Amino acid sequence: MMKFPTDFYFGGATAAFQTEGAVKEGNKGEVLWEPFLKKQGRFNPEPACDFYHRYPEDIQLSSDFGLNSIRISIAWARIFPTGSGEPEQAGVDYYHQMFAECFKQGVEPFVTLHHFDTPEALHQTGDWLNPENITKYVDYAKFCFQEFSEINYWITINEPTSMAVQQYTTGTFPPGEKYHFNKTFQAEHNLNLAHARVVNAFRTLKISGQIGVVHALQTVYPFDPTKPGDVHAAKLQDTLDNRLFLDGTLGGEYSQETLNLMNEILAANSQETIEIKDSELAELKQAAQQLDFVGVNYYFSKYMKEYHGISETIHNGTGKKGSSISRLQGIGESGVPDGIEMTDWDWPINPQGLYDQLERIHTNYPLVNDIYITENGLGLKENRPADGEVLDDQKRIDYIKLHLQAVLRAIEDGINVKGYFVWSLQDMFSWTNGYSKRYGLFFVDFETQERLPKKSAYWFKELTESRELN
Ligand code: BGP
Image 1 (spheres, rainbow, N blue to C red):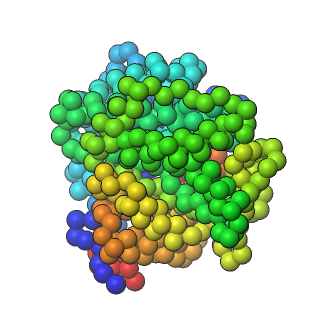
Image 2: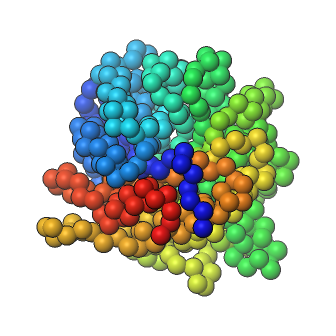
């Protein structure tokens, strides 16, 4: 089997709200999650893994374990506490210092402008459904491009699908609304537009460096490929989760088939279609032609069955295997075929799904230049190892290895994958699962904030040295 190319990026992925803690320090503004989590009363995003204070240690660990890059996000509310107005110098200084540490350690930062953490003040006024908030986001992005000129790789938005679908269909993200397919699709289009405006501004301002977008692309298959009803359910679920984003950001236009499938879902739920202006379509097209890369976050696949009942979803946010349900009116029902292994959080493991998704992007979206795997990893329940012992997370190594094999196959087949970021660098806070779902290469003792390399960290170090999968 071939080696990973010498200019391939291997990194650990992180996100501001999941790692930084210090939610009130440096005059940071509140973000949408704070009142939402407080009301739920399940877990506290403070102190997360205290990256705000401990970033030098985590960046040092990245470097020590052979990771030549890191995914980091800027918290919009550290720069503009209420989303717009005067920049907060403490936030600006903090990110300059953190980026300087990355460069000092030889770890290239890939910087995301929005990773699920809209300032609460803007969430209150309609979040992505309010066009004025899109303008504020573009202004924030332009400020960052000009201020943080040391950055070479920018990402506009992390997983717009997770926001739109979880905010308005499954209700697991704030504001927690369910089955509002009209709001979901309107938010999807608005997110595409927000992304496009930022890409176009990046080019107009002639910012140096590269710009991309990161999508969560869980591959959707029919549960039984011989049943036309299951095949159609898979297309509908894929439209809700993936298609509008792929068409909008990578294709530069919505195909008629995508629009028909979207309208079928809306009609089946007696909801109106969404508003898309011609001028906005022109912006999408321009941005798709100017995009440098797409990031793919891939964890699992979905298997859809035909379903004609009402919507019912239960989120497994506890790790109790088999507790989740997903049946959506006018779309379909999720099932798990025999022989597919599930995680404790009911995520079906299927490395082939990563290959299939890469191949689809390569084939269907020829404007795409470079592809990065910007998140992939396995959440596990783990305890602190005894003193002197290393946490044995062989299951995670096996998972990563199978997915990296799929990446290597894709590269061999001429698909331009330029890097792989494991989710996650260190254990951190999970939006809907708190602190019990750990993904890190480095175990974090949340009491003491100590970092302990897991077996997977040592495995990764060997991989980055040899560039070979063993
Ligand atoms: C992605 C997000 C990450 C991270 C990851 C794991 O959707 O971009 O922020 O949380 O998934 O998800 P979870 O924490 O729900 O297991």
